[in-house]
Every structure is written in C-alpha cells, then in structure tokens.
Image (cartoon, rainbow, N blue to C red; front, side, top):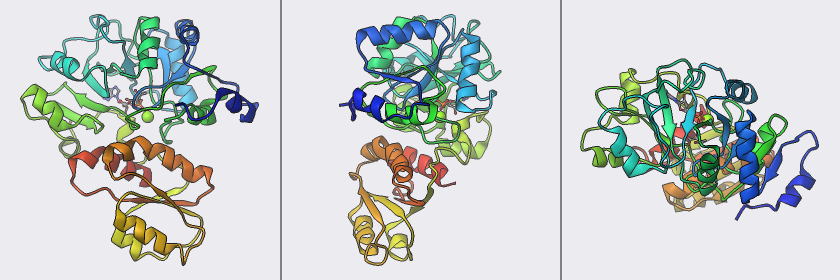
Length: 350
Ligand code: TXA
Ligand code: MG
C-alpha cells in the first residue's frame, strides 16, 4: 500500500536527509500532532498531494514553511481543518454558498477562498483579508488534524516551483534536510492539488482547477460558476496564487506536451521518456523506438482520474531515469474532465 518498506527507505537514504518517515500508527500520529503544536514542521499525506504543515498560530513555524520551500512569503497558504471543527474564529462571513459547498464536498479536494476570521494570522494569508480553507479526506490527515485541534497551514511539500509530492520519498528527496518528520500513509487517490473556488466576488470562480469541477459546484449551488478559463481572462479574481504562475510543477527534464500526430511527425533523439494513454499515441511511441532506441515508454490508463493520480510521480520518474526530456500526450482539448490535468501539464511545460 505504501510502495517501499520504511526500513529500506532509511537504509537507502542519504545521511544528510535527516527527516524521519513515520508509518501512520496511532502513536506516530500523536507524535506528529505534538510536534506541530510545539511549533515544528510536519509533512503529511492528503488525498491530493503531501502537505508541509505548521499550526496557523505558530507564527515562526509558518515562516519556516516559506523558508523550507523557498517560497515568496506573500503567497497565501491553505489552512487545513478537521471535519466538524468550529470555523468561527478562523473564517469570516462566507456568504450563502459556503455552507452548501462544505456540506457537499468536505471532507474532500475543494478549497474555499472566503473572508478570513479574526484569529487567522495574516502571515498565513499572505497579508490578504481572505483565507483558503480546506478539509481533506485522507484518513491520516483527518486523524492528524483532529489530534492537533486547530487549523494547519499546508502548502504542497515540495520546493517552490517543483513537482508536488505524491509519495513520502518525494518529500524526503526535496525537504528531507529541512524538516523533522514525514508522516506516511496510503497514496493520494486524487494526485493533483485541490480545486480552489473563490466565494469573494458576486459570482463564485475557479482559481485552480482540480478534481471537483465547476459543473459539480454549479449543480450544488444552482448558480453559474466562472470557470478557470473565465477567471483568467477576466483577470479580476486572481490574487497571488503560486499555483497560477505560468511555470510551476516542473521536473528538471524538459516537458513537451504533444498529440499523437505531432509525435508521429517528430524526429526524436536523446534520453527521453514518452508518456501517453491513447492507442494512437502509444503506437507511434513504439514506432519511434526504432529510430530512437533510448526512448522509454510509460503507458497510463486512458482515464483522466488515473492520469491525474499518476501525473506527478511520472514527471519525477523522468528525472529519476536521468531523462533530458519527457514527452507527454496532450489531453483532449476542451474536455472538462481533462481540464485539471491539462492545466498542470501546461505549467510543467512552460
Ligand atoms: O490540494 C491542495 O490544496 C494541497 C494539499 C497539501 O492540501 N495544497 C496546496 O497548497 O496545493 P499550495 O500552497 O501548494 O497551493 C495553495 C494555493 C496557492 O496557489 C495559494 O496562492 C492559493 O492556494 N491560496 C491560498 N489562500 C488563498 C487566498 N486567500 N486567495 C487566493 N488564493 C489563495
Ligand atoms: Mg504547491
């Protein structure tokens, strides 16, 4: 279930990487909760990606998140809460839509941007008067947040601009020498970051596409929701959202997104990883191997949910294999179910 046994992880890990990877036992969850309450940083799994957590009121720890990630500190963090927590101190008036979305999608991969409450420190919100808040569904995240009892600020547990981690080992590789504990758990089932919906304007708007779609939100609210494309083109609802930067989620290998026909017409050379899911793309990838013998092929299942789940591990695999480039199949254009994957690939390739 967790890929690699802990013992092996500890044996093969560089000594400079001092973070401990902990199995999600009750005592380790308690240990991590105590560490968080004492102002330490702890990485933990969610159903989307691993987060790098600090209790929101531990201001030094919150600063430590920005330092560990190398992230500009005016970028707001998402506050994670346990199911059923009293949001009163942390969140202001969320308007008529907030409770409906909480009832429909929490716990789960939906972050709400709403006015911040009096107790939410502005260092968490990047100085903004709004806060991104989310209640994850991963059982280890839920257990940890319940044990902590207050919100935990947690960006994805990667260095700024890099690929978000979906395995404890990914966190170890990037932040192992900067944090004490990495709590492990079942692999993220979603694999890409939560949908972010802003409830600040007159009309809800998608700031970051994810597993929860604009159509699903519309169905619950009974009002039109601005899609991510509409929000971007209007340019009004985008504050400092690091996930909105053009270049983000990038491995070291150069990412190229291309169609089956473009792959067929390409003259390939070098150490490349070719990732696709359609018969046409994989057929052309195999043909290309006659000219480019070092080409490696990874076939994903032809389903946007599965591609999302495997996306980041596959991008990291290109680096692990020492590839100079990764050729990723272009998702079907304009298909809502592929929007979030297309968004992450576009940024990885920017
Ligand atoms: O799935 C997720 O959301 C993961 C896991 C760990 O929960 N977290 C995550 O965090 O993706 P991060 O920091 O990598 O991305 C959070 C995004 C950023 O782009 C940030 O700018 C945006 O949320 N955000 C947070 N608060 C906001 C606010 N008040 N207004 C607008 N955007 C906000
Ligand atoms: Mg991130």
